Amino acid sequence: TWNDDNYTLLIEPSVKYTYNQKEAFNQRYYTINISPQPEANVFINNFDYGSSPIEVSSDKKQTIKVQLKNNQYETYEKSITFGKDKKLTTKLKAVVANLKIASNPGGAKVIVDGRERGKTGRNKTVNIKNIPLNQTIEIKLQLKNYIDNEITWAPPKKGDNYLKINLERRIGFLRIQRQSGVKSEDIDVQINGVSRGKLSTYNRDTLTLNAGNNIIVLKHKDAVREKTFDIPLEDTQDWKVNFMEKAEITITF
Image (cartoon, rainbow, N blue to C red; front, side):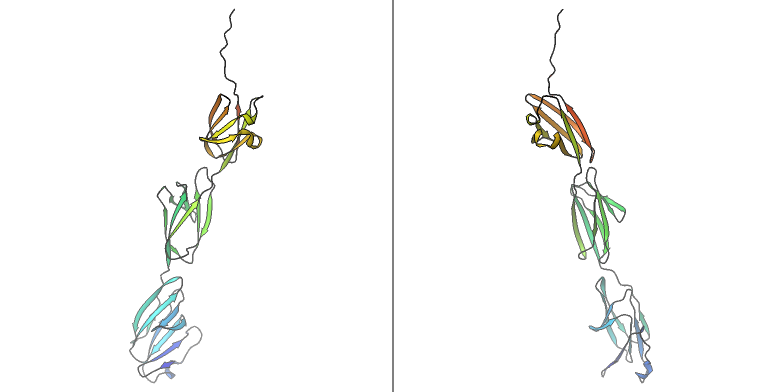
C-alpha cells in the first residue's frame, strides 16, 4: 500500500491472497483488475509492480498510465481513470518477423511447415510473414538434380529478415569402357565444354558428374567421340567407346 496527499494505491496479487480492502480505506474506493493474456510485467506511472495479474485500488478519481511488457510481445499502453471498478484484460500482440527466402541456384520449391509456399527465382524470393519471435519454422527446399535442403529457423529479430540457401548438386557416374589397345592416358576428357585432363586421372576410368544432362567429349589422337548423358543421381552408366575410324573397303572380283 502506498499513500500521499493526493491518492492511495493498493497493489494486490489477486491469485495469491485476498486483502480486506475496507481496512485500507475509510471511504469509497475504486479497483482496476489487470490481467492480460499472456502474463506481462505491469508498469504503473513508469514504476514496475511485477507480473500480472494484479489489482490496483484508489480512493481518488485519479488517472494512471499502465504499461504491459513482455519480451515476446509489443508493449501495451493505456491511461485509465479510477471512477468505477474496471478490468483490463487485453490480449497482447505478438512481436513478429518477416522472412525472405532465396536459393542458389534459383527455381527451388519452398516448403514451410509442410506447406508449399512458392518457388525462388533469379531475382525472386519467397516471402513468409508474421512469424512470432518465440516460434521456429521448418523450411525445406527442393530442386531437380539437387539434394533437398532442410533447416529449422527462428527469427533473430523482429521485422524483415533474409535467408539465402545454397543447394548441393547431386552426382552420378559414367564408366568409360575403352576399346582394347587404347590406353586411358592417351584419352583426353572434356565435360560440358571444360577440359578435364586425361582419362587415366579418373579411378577405374569412371567420371564423376553432376546429375542431369552432361555433354562428354573423348579424344584419342585424331578420333573424337561425343555423347550427351542424362545421369541419374547416385547411379552409374557405361559408355563403350571405339576410336577406330570406319574405312571404306572396295572388293573387286
